[in-house]
Image (cartoon, rainbow, N blue to C red; front, side, top):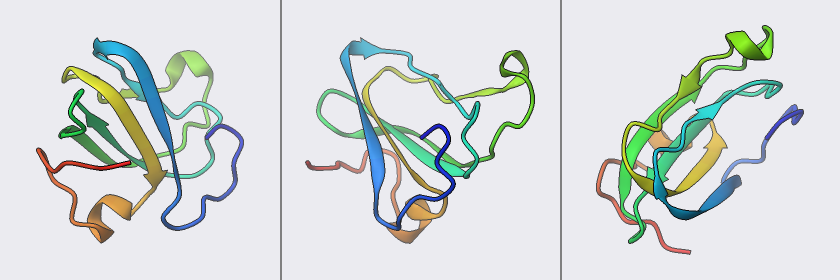
Length: 95
């Protein structure tokens, strides 16, 4: 999502990791706020971070979000999508 100045409603970026692990995200050079959900290998939501703010400082000062639960997938969406769809822990997403 780096360098994007907007994201269309109901769009996002799905990250597919080769194996389950602890995968955090950061907002370096991402000028829009994002919601992110992390999912296990069965696509069940194991972690949610809403409204991750843009980071306008040096890369070394940008905070990392999530990555506290073992996940194999993560989905970044525009801020507000978690609330719009009432997503919660252990919901299952299909694709």
